[in-house]
Length: 389
Image (cartoon, rainbow, N blue to C red; front, side, top):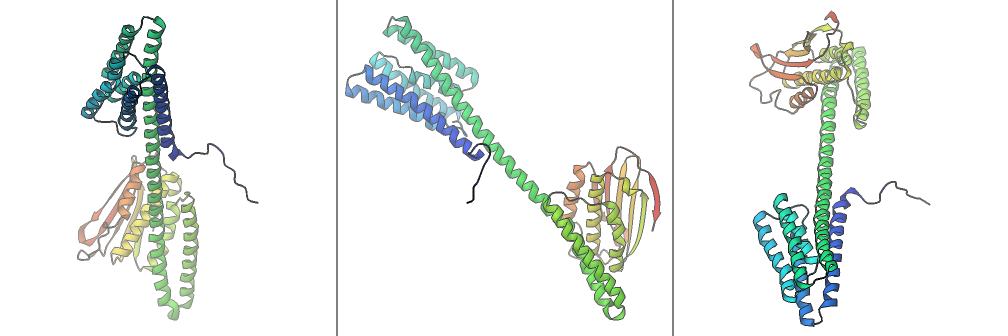
């Protein structure tokens, strides 16, 4: 038999606003029931009881339907008119029956605090409590009754204000958490799509070029075709490994590995490459190496897709400010409809570099050449290494 176990509270975070509203309505309803019981004990006439029940229901409707709205409090003009109506519903039974009930004045005091600016609402709260004390003095001379009604009004008003405001904060926090969750999901989707673009854009282009080269060599140079097919298998296997790493969120590239594997891809595309690396790229920090490796991939993919390049120049160097990677190539046809910067690849790279304080520039240079420059600031100087190919 299959059993399921869970840890922690059974309710989901999305239930918090519902629970908050339910608690507010339950507490306010409880106060109204106590008010009606007190009215029933002191007023004998059925007509007068019905009159008081009607007014109490009106106060309750205003309290829950307007002042108890947790997400969108009423606008000030609406709140003023609603407070005037609630004051009328509160004080008319008191003046009619010369009996003070703490429930409805307490609702009014809490509503003033909820609907008005804090200083004005606090003053209104004090006025309501004081008026209840004065009205109770007019209807009875017992100090206990006066103190009981006054304190009860203040307590109910405080509970109405505090509980409603607290429930509103619960709703705000729950909504904020939902927005944060949606933003996190969107960011993860963006990261995943960018990583897949970085992986498949370059790798699929390399596979296509090597497959075309193998097709040309299959009759005239079978060993060469066999070697190219072996490289295609290696690239495919590495792509599978990288895709799994992306799915786990642990994908990382190495500029050293990408630069070392660049030559075979360019040979398959029949592009002559001058590679000038003036630093020991193995000493680059991992996050810098990974981002620059992605830049190199996208730059090469752009060159292969959007140009008829026959020569390119790759330079990786460093100075006191940071490390720079640049790739320029010829063969950019200005009359072609596809421009290297039209897609999302370079824009994504710009965002990646910005996260580590870097910059990316690209554009067309003289004689139909296209150049991409990436710069990343580094806090320390790197050891130089002359490696010109």
